[in-house]
Image 1 (tube, rainbow, N blue to C red):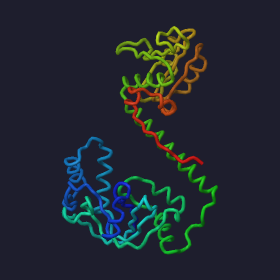
Image 2 (tube, one colour):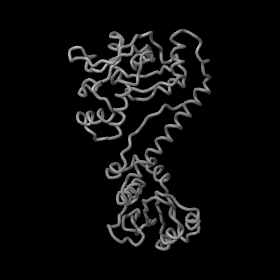
Image 3 (tube, one colour):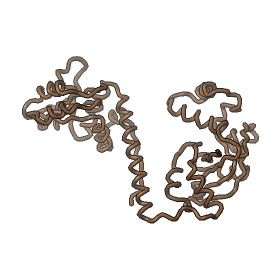
Image 4 (cartoon, rainbow, N blue to C red):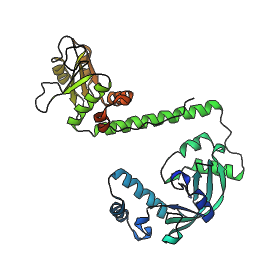
Length: 333
């Protein structure tokens, strides 16, 4: 069964006109040489690491996968598209089934790896359904297209009736669903990064969140902490209420009632307690916190991720180093 592929025309679509005029698509990674010399993924990975490093193994894996798709997985007859952000249009064509490594004097500007394509025409982005536009948002240099996207592209390209135009309510519903999906994925990725912190880093991360909320903090030195890892208060001395005591448990498995009860015993009258457990809490532990004589909040990893996002704009340098995040803009209604 024929497949479909997006192959981006360089950063910002800068090679779009070159792709069209030379009837091809191309990718970089020129230092690897002719990709046909690598018979296995391991050979390709080792060559990539040799030439491009491996500072971020996840990025290395993505690059190797895209290179392999470009060279070996794309086949003759597959649909190929590329995009011009400037003109908001897609160039649609058919792969001719041939990969080639070009010499330095014949490259597509600075891209040496090419596949030859028979271009069939252009499709305006605004003519596509909202579902198709949403699915084409990936920034990967090479990725596979769904059958629905290919059908939508070809319906517009050939002038056949595509899916009926969506009503404004349907478009808004699609945006809402996409936004919720991205938020959910982002939340899980943030939790993954928090989970990678060491137990000592987790204590400093808890302190960073409290500082972002306006408190002065003190992290207990390594060694016996008598049930308190972080102390926080408005004045940094514990003389001004609220005086907060924090226990941090960064380990697998839910905290039970006995452990929470032990922490409750160190939270004195007039003090507040926060018990952080990245492994969560049992129902009995939550019951103990609910009936504690002094206020005690139980914070799991979901709560930590939410608190980090809600207060990130006030994070100091230490907090941002422990959890580097970037801001993403999203269209409002």
